[in-house]
Image (cartoon, rainbow, N blue to C red; front, side, top):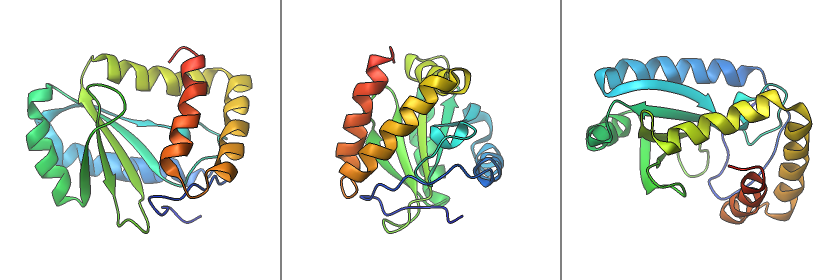
Length: 169
Protein backbone atom coordinates (compact mmCIF):
# COMPACT_ATOMS: atom_id res chain seq x y z
CA UNK A 1 0.00 0.00 0.00
CA UNK A 2 1.17 3.52 -0.77
CA UNK A 3 2.60 5.54 2.09
CA UNK A 4 1.82 9.25 2.27
CA UNK A 5 -1.01 11.71 1.79
CA UNK A 6 -1.51 15.32 0.65
CA UNK A 7 -1.06 17.53 3.70
CA UNK A 8 -4.63 18.91 3.57
CA UNK A 9 -6.43 15.69 2.67
CA UNK A 10 -7.90 13.07 4.96
CA UNK A 11 -8.12 9.49 3.78
CA UNK A 12 -8.43 6.50 6.09
CA UNK A 13 -7.15 3.23 4.69
CA UNK A 14 -7.21 -0.32 6.10
CA UNK A 15 -4.41 -1.35 8.44
CA UNK A 16 -1.19 -2.29 6.64
CA UNK A 17 1.37 -4.48 8.47
CA UNK A 18 4.10 -2.76 6.42
CA UNK A 19 3.56 0.35 8.58
CA UNK A 20 5.62 -1.33 11.30
CA UNK A 21 8.46 -1.87 8.81
CA UNK A 22 8.30 1.76 7.64
CA UNK A 23 8.48 2.84 11.27
CA UNK A 24 11.45 0.58 12.06
CA UNK A 25 13.39 1.86 9.04
CA UNK A 26 12.82 5.48 10.04
CA UNK A 27 13.44 4.78 13.73
CA UNK A 28 16.85 3.28 12.91
CA UNK A 29 17.79 6.30 10.82
CA UNK A 30 16.55 8.77 13.45
CA UNK A 31 18.43 7.00 16.24
CA UNK A 32 21.65 7.10 14.20
CA UNK A 33 21.48 10.79 13.38
CA UNK A 34 20.11 12.06 16.70
CA UNK A 35 22.48 9.95 18.80
CA UNK A 36 23.04 11.31 22.29
CA UNK A 37 20.25 13.91 21.93
CA UNK A 38 17.62 11.19 21.92
CA UNK A 39 16.47 9.15 24.92
CA UNK A 40 13.72 7.16 23.17
CA UNK A 41 11.84 6.81 19.88
CA UNK A 42 8.37 5.23 19.72
CA UNK A 43 5.86 4.34 17.00
CA UNK A 44 2.65 6.18 17.93
CA UNK A 45 -0.64 7.14 16.36
CA UNK A 46 -3.05 4.81 14.62
CA UNK A 47 -0.42 3.13 12.42
CA UNK A 48 1.09 1.81 15.68
CA UNK A 49 -2.12 -0.02 16.63
CA UNK A 50 -2.47 -3.40 14.94
CA UNK A 51 -5.67 -3.60 12.90
CA UNK A 52 -6.45 0.13 13.17
CA UNK A 53 -7.43 1.90 9.94
CA UNK A 54 -5.42 5.08 9.57
CA UNK A 55 -4.16 7.83 7.37
CA UNK A 56 -1.16 6.29 5.55
CA UNK A 57 1.29 8.46 7.50
CA UNK A 58 3.71 7.06 10.09
CA UNK A 59 3.61 8.89 13.44
CA UNK A 60 6.78 8.82 15.49
CA UNK A 61 7.43 10.26 18.95
CA UNK A 62 10.96 11.28 19.87
CA UNK A 63 11.95 11.98 23.47
CA UNK A 64 14.97 14.22 23.73
CA UNK A 65 17.24 13.81 26.74
CA UNK A 66 16.51 17.49 27.42
CA UNK A 67 14.35 19.96 25.52
CA UNK A 68 17.36 22.30 25.34
CA UNK A 69 18.50 20.06 22.45
CA UNK A 70 15.47 21.05 20.35
CA UNK A 71 17.33 23.53 18.10
CA UNK A 72 19.99 20.93 17.35
CA UNK A 73 17.30 18.33 16.64
CA UNK A 74 15.53 20.75 14.27
CA UNK A 75 18.74 21.14 12.25
CA UNK A 76 19.40 17.39 12.14
CA UNK A 77 15.83 16.51 11.16
CA UNK A 78 15.89 19.15 8.40
CA UNK A 79 18.84 17.31 6.85
CA UNK A 80 16.60 14.22 6.62
CA UNK A 81 13.84 16.13 4.85
CA UNK A 82 11.71 16.97 7.89
CA UNK A 83 9.99 20.35 8.03
CA UNK A 84 9.58 21.91 11.47
CA UNK A 85 6.08 23.31 12.01
CA UNK A 86 6.47 24.55 15.58
CA UNK A 87 4.82 23.63 18.83
CA UNK A 88 1.84 21.36 18.26
CA UNK A 89 -1.56 21.34 19.94
CA UNK A 90 -0.07 19.94 23.15
CA UNK A 91 2.24 22.19 25.14
CA UNK A 92 5.82 20.99 24.99
CA UNK A 93 5.32 18.82 21.88
CA UNK A 94 7.01 20.02 18.69
CA UNK A 95 5.76 18.90 15.29
CA UNK A 96 7.63 17.91 12.11
CA UNK A 97 6.50 16.47 8.78
CA UNK A 98 8.46 14.59 6.15
CA UNK A 99 7.79 14.66 2.46
CA UNK A 100 6.42 17.23 0.04
CA UNK A 101 3.00 18.77 0.66
CA UNK A 102 1.56 16.46 -2.00
CA UNK A 103 2.77 13.33 -0.20
CA UNK A 104 3.55 13.71 3.49
CA UNK A 105 4.80 10.32 4.72
CA UNK A 106 5.83 10.86 8.36
CA UNK A 107 4.77 12.99 11.30
CA UNK A 108 7.27 13.38 14.12
CA UNK A 109 6.38 14.65 17.58
CA UNK A 110 9.43 15.78 19.58
CA UNK A 111 9.23 16.34 23.30
CA UNK A 112 11.33 15.97 26.43
CA UNK A 113 11.86 12.59 28.04
CA UNK A 114 9.45 12.14 30.95
CA UNK A 115 7.35 15.19 30.06
CA UNK A 116 3.56 15.23 30.29
CA UNK A 117 3.37 15.35 26.47
CA UNK A 118 5.62 12.26 26.20
CA UNK A 119 3.57 10.29 28.70
CA UNK A 120 0.23 11.27 27.13
CA UNK A 121 1.16 10.27 23.59
CA UNK A 122 2.31 6.83 24.80
CA UNK A 123 -0.66 6.36 27.13
CA UNK A 124 -3.13 7.04 24.31
CA UNK A 125 -1.40 4.58 21.98
CA UNK A 126 -1.33 1.94 24.73
CA UNK A 127 -4.99 2.60 25.56
CA UNK A 128 -5.98 1.81 21.96
CA UNK A 129 -3.81 -1.32 21.96
CA UNK A 130 -5.32 -2.64 25.21
CA UNK A 131 -8.97 -1.65 24.71
CA UNK A 132 -10.24 -3.26 21.47
CA UNK A 133 -13.81 -1.98 21.89
CA UNK A 134 -12.55 1.60 22.28
CA UNK A 135 -10.16 1.11 19.36
CA UNK A 136 -13.07 -0.01 17.17
CA UNK A 137 -15.15 2.96 18.30
CA UNK A 138 -12.25 5.28 17.47
CA UNK A 139 -11.77 3.62 14.06
CA UNK A 140 -15.45 4.13 13.18
CA UNK A 141 -15.24 7.76 14.27
CA UNK A 142 -12.13 8.36 12.16
CA UNK A 143 -13.76 6.85 9.09
CA UNK A 144 -16.88 8.98 9.52
CA UNK A 145 -14.84 12.14 10.11
CA UNK A 146 -12.62 11.40 7.10
CA UNK A 147 -15.71 11.57 4.89
CA UNK A 148 -16.94 14.74 6.57
CA UNK A 149 -13.54 16.48 6.54
CA UNK A 150 -11.94 14.93 3.41
CA UNK A 151 -10.28 18.24 2.45
CA UNK A 152 -9.85 19.73 5.93
CA UNK A 153 -7.10 18.04 7.95
CA UNK A 154 -7.34 20.66 10.73
CA UNK A 155 -11.11 20.18 11.07
CA UNK A 156 -10.64 16.41 11.14
CA UNK A 157 -8.00 16.67 13.87
CA UNK A 158 -10.13 19.03 15.96
CA UNK A 159 -13.18 16.77 15.72
CA UNK A 160 -11.10 13.72 16.62
CA UNK A 161 -9.64 15.56 19.61
CA UNK A 162 -13.08 15.85 21.19
CA UNK A 163 -13.36 12.05 21.38
CA UNK A 164 -9.78 11.70 22.62
CA UNK A 165 -10.44 14.21 25.42
CA UNK A 166 -13.66 12.38 26.31
CA UNK A 167 -11.51 9.30 26.96
CA UNK A 168 -9.40 11.21 29.47
CA UNK A 169 -6.46 12.19 27.25
